Amino acid sequence: MFTADYLNVKNGHLCAGECDTVELAKTHGTPLYVMDEDTVRKNCRMFKTCMEKNYQNALVLFASKALNCLEMCRIANEEGLGLDVVSGGEIYTALKAGFPADRMFFHGNNKTRDELCLALDNHIGTIVVDNLFELEELNELCGEKGVKANIMFRIKPGIDAHTHDFIRTGQIDSKFGLALENGEALEAVKEAVKLPNVTLTGLHCHIGSQIFGDEPFKEAAKVMLRFYKQLKDELGLELADLNLGGGFGIKYLESDQPMAYDAFMAQVAVIVHDFCKQNGLCEPRILIEPGRSIVGAAGITLYTVGAVKEIKNVRNYVTIDGGMCDNPRYALYQSAYTVVNASQADKPADYTATIAGKCCESGDLIGENIKIAKPDKGDILAVLSTGAYNYSMASNYNRNPRAEMVMVKDGKARTIIKRESYEDLIRNDI
Ligand code: LLP
Image (cartoon, rainbow, N blue to C red; front, side, top):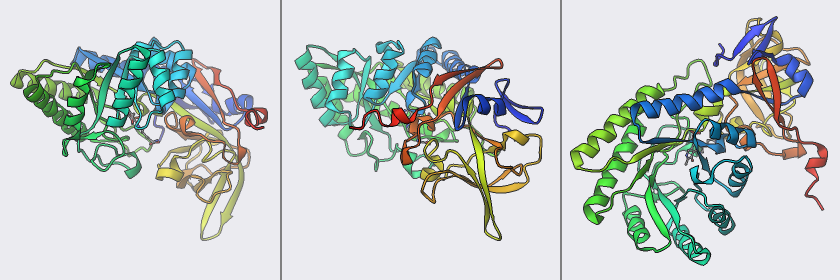
């Protein structure tokens, strides 16, 4: 039933990182995001070790869009990862956390001029350029500032990964990056090498998120390598870096089967070694950018149950004091979750519930037909695997303050993001 090994049951209550979640809810209030520090660090190390073991010249970046806050940036730094940042806000947070600018990679399909300036002024290591408009603007800005920027290009490798439509990005019909099939990627490279203020260090691709099979990733690696060969053959250009993106699926339900990351990396390493050897190419440094697979399963969200509306022959609505404001993923993608009645965690999960949030939207649900132990008003529900794309996608809809986040470790919890107050909500109102 449980999808993470930092969770267990003591005295009928769900515990996370040896903390009783019902006590956590009492002390910190709900909704409450709970992150397990050991799991986050273990995941960082797993990817790092996996890359170092299989392909020495490698760098793992944490895709901070999955969870960007000061403490997560500090942890990623302490664990020796690089950072994928995708907005001025993510850059600002990472800098404030003391994350070294040279290990940051700035992504985004429509970076604003202000964001590009922020990146240049703070010497962000690499800018992953999405299109020719951006290339031109960046070259011009660098000229004005008298600096030179390292850039990579975001490439659409033409791989159609089987995941939700809204989180597929590798196919030609995507707002992200430059296509290979119509020659625009090649044109962009030709243009970049002519420009005086940018240095093209490599190429990047990202085919989507929450992907289970390893085939699409291997296919993308091969497509990218063929393009590296084409660049060498046609332009005499050998690029130092190849970023294969993130997107590795995690377990939300018992039936989900994430790939064995280690075995996957070993296969990618073989693909790169073999291709480079056969084609006389220098082996590039390989970068990967996991987000969800570092923080997703390390987090849970706690809610307090309010009304339980049993509508005969229709369904049972179990209402909670959060919902789409702190987790919009069901409303957006019908994402499935495992939910546990944390107050009665030793009871059988034999009650069928639709977990409904408190926003004025019928679609504000966390899940439908979920099996939990029958809840009483005031029980604490725990939604599992909410560490990625929950806090980072939270909103203040209906003027709900954003929830607090605690980090648990060895039976202790410390607040890493404070709960917003009503005063916070009107701070920028005039
Ligand atoms: N690199 C790039 C360029 C990306 O766009 C993303 C995710 C990642 C890396 C990290 O992917 P991950 O390892 O976390 O799958 N909000 C959606 C997910 C959107 C993913 C956006 N890009 C969700 O809640 O499922």
